[in-house]
Length: 227
Image 1 (cartoon, one colour):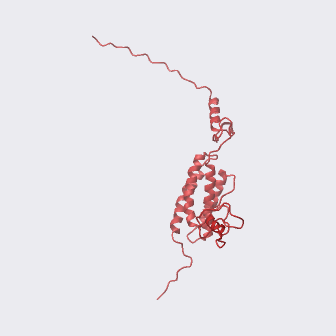
Image 2 (cartoon, rainbow, N blue to C red):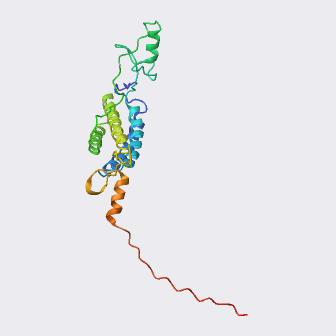
């Protein structure tokens, strides 16, 4: 009787379905990023940031799990922001250690950011560059790809999300008349200006409105009913 040997390169459970989700969500996001003008309104980046976060949830499930504590016992535990030197970031383990349990040592310090965060400045060009890198990484992705490839895709999606999230924030000009007012990307004369001052200059350039006086119609004659 012939026996079949199982392949050593098995596809993890759920990977085909999650990978299909990534392939279905990516084209629409890619088209929306390419259709954005430069500069674009922050509200347009807000919708793209929401779509990228939804895509990140799918790519995060394909990659290895990461935690902010770096602790295997408490991966989702609180982070100790006042951890002593050479201690871990897990607050639960560090609390037990402070109480006199030296055996309760946390894991090594995790990276500063759990997922990739690109350095500023966050511009439209940086978003397009991250998009191109993501498309190149997705072309080489398949069911039997190494774990490092899925990690790289998740980092690129998160980086694109961070850039679009920062671009979606209202841009303030620091106007003395309207402090905190958003910046008008299409201000006249090509210089940065708050949206209220830009509107005032536009109205001034148009001049006073012209009112066309239309002749009034004569009143209809009043007809008295016959008595």
